[in-house]
Image (cartoon, rainbow, N blue to C red; front, side):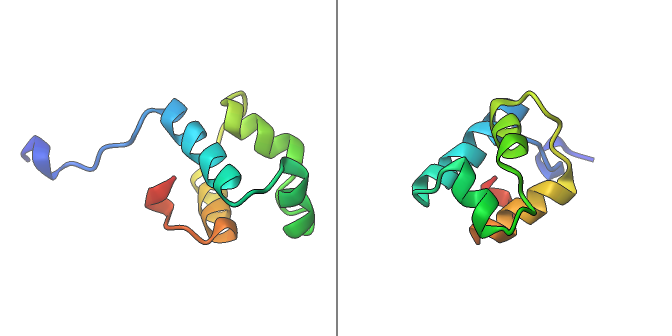
Length: 75
């Protein structure tokens, strides 16, 4: 298999930055996200994901992309 056919994953720090960037572009605070998601996305957890101090699962990435209404690839 040639390298150009492989799907590459961005560095985790880049995912964390994108996650924060999408939230800020929507003009939302961490607490806004928690409130608007009816507590499904906790502000403390989201802040930890954005800082990279908490592991981010694919399931949570999909949930966040859905919440922000962006393609998963944007994260």
